[in-house]
Each structure stands twice: as structure tokens, then as C-alpha cells.
Image (cartoon, rainbow, N blue to C red; front, side, top):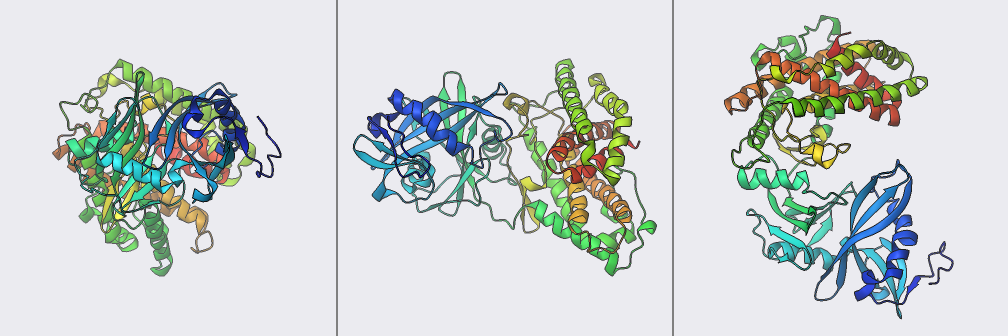
Length: 540
């Protein structure tokens, strides 16, 4: 096998085999998985191993799928790391002769037998995208391919019109069909159905939930060891961007009001964290400062969040979705997870103190001094006192997972927490964990606004932080009032006020400690946000 001047990329990799038999050819597999793939995969946005050292890539399985014109391969890769763990990825492959090539995104120039051409990611070929669409429409089950295409009950398009990529390449690749549907191709795969597929299909087909994009189809690989979800198709919903962007704009307006309305921050009435507030009970000074419309939007979001949880906990037949109580097994799982994570964050903070200064450093020292109290809070989870129920939850719920649609919201991306194993993502948890995730997202949006507009608001930072905490407490109060009322009227058992407060505090703390690791590793200046969050929850 020749491997000439590979830097210039002009000389192709040369193989004896033809394309129809390429993936049964040992020589092709060997060169493809080492020389070709390692260079290509490391730069892809969806590749999740950037923080680790790649050891080798192995092709663990493949299937062949053909259109009238072309043969394609679906390849399952196992990426092994020096740190002794591995990840699995899905890669659809096409071979295009030079004259057929219609994309710049090539994996490598190759020669198969006498034919020169290019190895490309098949998703960049319209013929392949059409093939996937047609197979979902026909809901084909192809036993020898191990591929199962499913057509959702809400999918009524019969013919392929167009396809294009949606936005930037994320951790998955999304394709828009007929300007009406989005097919998300999962790049990182698990030998287990993907929670996003599982929950999306359940919400649409079992619970007729209206506030997330309707499930319209899927692609799964049925292997003896379990199902692997390769693709999830949903309707494309009209939206004006995500709730994070919306919230940043709104909060900027709120901080501008401090200046234009000459508001004295020290005179603003505060409330304790978790105090429920009906909108007509919010003091006029706060309404004057924040505006009524933002509180009304929070109310809508609270309602949709509660409806999502009522749907996720509302099935008595499907055991994957029936509510369950707390028990010893769950508590052991929870505490092990929490203590491991807490210790990991303590190590990071001890190694990062030199990166911090000012308030962040002061808060970090406070955190270190109070670490026993925080740890004790995690250990003090007593399941015997819990009267509420656990359900399947969103698991990674924040403003970036919510789309704004006029005055309403769509909730999406049920894949779960990226750091968690696939099994952990399916563990039933308190629905209040999602609520806490959203509250941390509010906290972030408020502080990010202060950090990103340092010279815009004519106040000392301490004053702005004081206003931030007051604003946060009212956001939480208004949201909780609507959420709790809606959840309880929908027979979702979230416990009584004492238990609600305990669970919220527990989950907020867990989230803030989780964020701390992320911030210290990637942008230490922002560590002040989770540190401030931990301080206001623990009140030390």
C-alpha cells in the first residue's frame, strides 16, 4: 500500500479492493481506521474526546445501504483513549468519483482498484439524505441490515423535496427536510436507546404533549446486545431563537431600567429564596423595575415545565415512565455520585486558586472553609422522609434547551446530562432537579448580563450583584408559584413545601458544584457565578 506525500493530500491512499467490498477488506479497514480517520475525526465538532489522548480507533461494526445510484456504509467506530476508556461514534461513508463530488467536506482522496475518488461523510451527499428520508416514509425494517426505520404517527409527508444542514455542526448533525422536519443524526452512540428518542416518541405518541417538537420518525440499529439509536426525526417548529438569548436581552433591559428609572438598589424590597409569589403579590417597586411582561413569560415557562413533568410521570403502563418512590438503592446511587463529584470539584478548586482573584478568590476560600457543611448536605439525603415520587426527567434542562415561539415555549433535547453515563441518564429523579437546572440558568443569565456589559450600567459591581440576587429571588418565587400549583393540580407528586424546599436546595447545590468544575477549567473569571450560587443556597 503506497502512502506517498500525504501532507499535500494530492496522492490518494491506494487500495486493491473495490468500494462494494471495501469494508470486508482487512487492508482497507486497517488504513482507514488509523491513517485516514485519526486525522479527520479529531477536528470535528461532534468529536467528544478533545480533552483526552487518542490511542487507536477500531471499526467495530458496519452495514451497507444502497440507493439506486450508490452504495453507502454506516460504520460504528470505537475510539480508545490512553486514559483507559472508550467512546462509540457513528459515521456514514460514501465514495465519490471526482466528477460526482459535490461537497468540500472530504475525509480523504482514495483510489480503489483503478478508480480515483474521494471518501466523504455520506450526510454531505443529497442522494444519501434522500435515501434516509424515503426509508423513514416507507418505515422499512431490514433484518439483514439490522436497521429499523420507524415512521411516527405525526409524519404525513410522502415525498422528498429538499434537504439542508441546520446551522452549525453541533455534537450531533441535524438535517432539515422539506423545510418541515429535522432529522438529528447522533454522532456519539450508545448500546441503548437514546433518551432523546425514547422521551420524544413517548411524549408525542403516548402523551400527546404539545410543547415539544412532535416525533415523526427514527432510525435504530437492532443489535443482539441492544438497540442503538442513530437518528431522530421531529417536526421543525417555528421559533425566534432560544430562551437563553431571549433572557439575556430581557435582563439587559431590566438592568438598564436601574439607570433610566433612577432606582435605588438599597431600597428594593427583597424576599427569601424559594418564597412563592403570586404576580399580584409582587411589590410595585419590583414590577416597576422588572416589568410585568417578563413575570408573565416566566409564568408560561413554569406552566410548560410542569406540563412536561406531568406527561413524563403520567403513564401507568410503560414501566420506563411510571413514577416510583425513593428507596435505599437510589440513595446509595445518589450519594456515591454526589460525593465523587464533590471531591473532584474540591481537587479542581485547590489546583485553581492561583487563577482566581477578587471576589472569586474570596468566595473560593469561603467555599473551602465550609466544605464540610456542603458535603454534609449531600450526605444528609434521607429517603425515608421523602413522600414525593421520582420520574423520568429532562435531565439537562436549561434556557438553551428551550425555544421561544411568540409568547410561548417549546422544550427540546432530552438527551440528558453530557457527563453522565447512558444508564444514569435514565434513572428516575425528582422533577425538581429540572426546575433547579432552570433556576441555575436564570442565575447565569443574570450574572452573564453583568459580566458582559461591565461599562453599560453606572453602578458598582457589588451593587449590581445585590440587585442580581434580588432579581433572582423574584424569578424563582414567581416561577415556583405557577409550577407547584400546576404540578399538583396535574397529580404530580412533588411533596409538600418542606420537601420541595429540601429537594430544590439539594439539586441547586448539586448543579452549582457541577458548574464549578466546568468554569474553573474553561473560564475561571466566571467561577464567581457558581460560587455565589453555592453561597446564597447554603447561606454561610
